[in-house]
Amino acid sequence: MHRLKVAVVGVGHLGKEHARVYAEMPGVELFSVVDIQRKQAEKVAQQYNTRYFLNYKDIIDKIQAVSIAVPTKSHYAIAKDFLQHGVHVMIEKPMTGTVLEARELIDISKARGLVLQAGYIERFNPAIAAIKRLSVNPRFIECHRLSPFTFRSADIGVVLDLMIHDIDILLYITNSKVKKFDAVGVNVISDKEDIANVRIQFQNGCVANVTASRVSITPMRKIRLFSEDSYISIDYQKKDALIYKKSPELTLKSLNICDTNVSTIADLKSYVFGDLLKIEHIKMDDYEPLKKELESFVDCIVNHKEPVVSGEEGLRAIEVANDILREIEKNLKIT
Image (cartoon, rainbow, N blue to C red; front, side, top):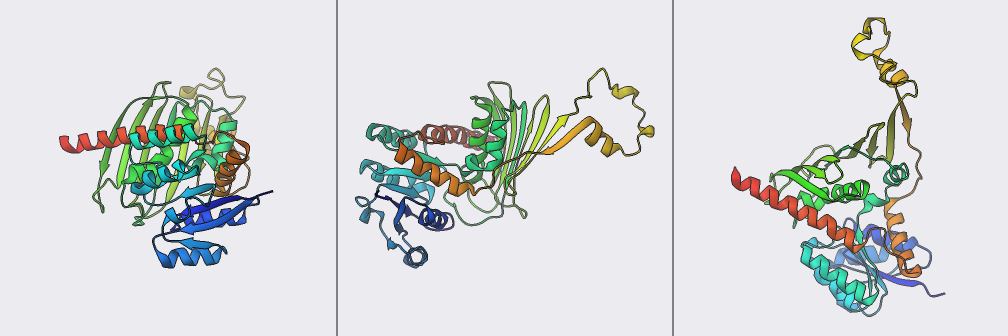
């Protein structure tokens, strides 16, 4: 059985991890890595026992699939070249910088029967997979995605760099279109927004408050979901999730808040988070999200499946992100 020939274009901070996963994957041959920085390309190639090139066009007719992990401004041109040469494409978020570019890539991939997968790694986080199995119907969601300034992805602001992960997750969990939103952003170090906050109202009534920053001291990747019968807290970094649920004994009739005499309760915290509300760890599988993501990409190619995160879903996230950027720009002009 022939192994699938795969290459990675751009082997910096994230791309080198793509190379690692492919090199370890059964049924896959890491044919080469590509990077314009010779030293980095050579280093990663030696590490994973493969060849390296400085120009992706040197391998375009030699492979069957590619991961693209270069700066966003180059996504469209490189992905288009590979798709037009019959190569399946996995492209890191955001898929492209513009809606029109994303639509063109989708059209090419469909016309040629190719897999086009958008790289939203949180979709493959075991915490999100566990939450999806619970069929939660959230009414309010809070997202916080904070990181220090890394000087990577300097060609885009924090909305397309970080917040777009949460945009994709929100669209996935709510399964609803955006009705309206308010957005603000501030540039601190770069000439683009480094901090942004958005309040999104979805057509199904759910409201989300989303904060992203790339100038924070302490990294954070958390999401909280509030529904009528539960509250769920997810820490992406720790791959940990807690669910707070009403005790079966708790009803409005059995507990009169106004008449409750707290002086008779020895430990108020234990009473609330023991007798009234039950806290449980949500069981989840233990796996590496990136490995799961790339295995899914390969499986879609080999078994002719639709990607978990399709080009269309990548496009929807870009559409919402670009609308947010326009709102931020509008509010900056007002002030």
